[in-house]
Length: 240
Ligand code: 13P
Image 1 (cartoon, rainbow, N blue to C red):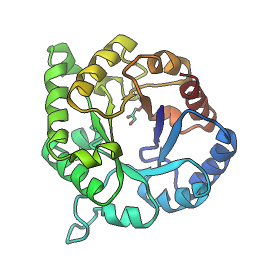
Image 2 (image 1 turned 90 degrees about the vertical axis):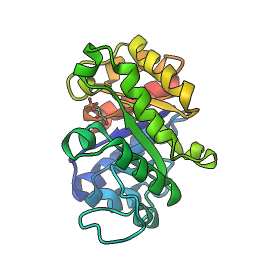
Image 3 (image 1 turned 180 degrees about the vertical axis):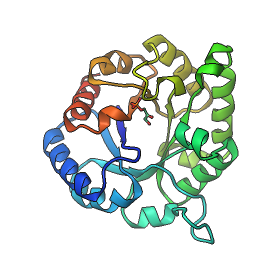
Image 4 (image 1 turned 60 degrees about the vertical axis):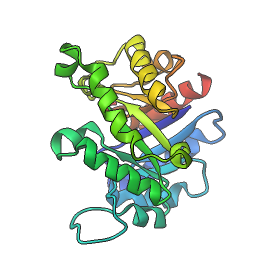
């Protein structure tokens, strides 16, 4: 099981150090689950330092595809690797809807991050409009195809997909375990990688979602900002 906390644009360096100290103590000795935190860029250095002697990993929330170059405001995956960051989320739906991320640019970023030696959690998922129009399978299939074209066999072990239905993100509306299971099965029929579910996962619903055969973990937003609720989800995962 894999549990990743996407902090989005929350927690600067001070708060990050305090959070990591508490999380480290809280999860000490927990087996059966790999835990990742994804702080904002300015907090990565502190998170890496605080969690260096633990099994907890630190991922960025985005990465550019190039090693270096004239890309003002972008962050090189090679530089992330150099500072001890283990991986990156790529193509979160907020990047797609608010910052112009496309299937094509997502594919470039995934390829660049894998080339740099990072792990990648690539995000896919349909909007409410697309689900209502019966297009969930088509949309997710298209997004997964774009990812699969750039991933070489030898890099597959460093890739995971997060299925995050856009209508379930930050809304308190979770996909039913059956809805998640159906889409996870579809993704796995194309790519043999772990598939995480994301969208309003909380301590109260984590166990049921994680008990589905094709749900290999979860990507948590809001509930990952609080040590107690994030730890409770990690504990539910370790029991699943
Ligand atoms: P919430 O858990 O707040 O719905 O966010 C999900 C998400 O976007 C994680 O990447």
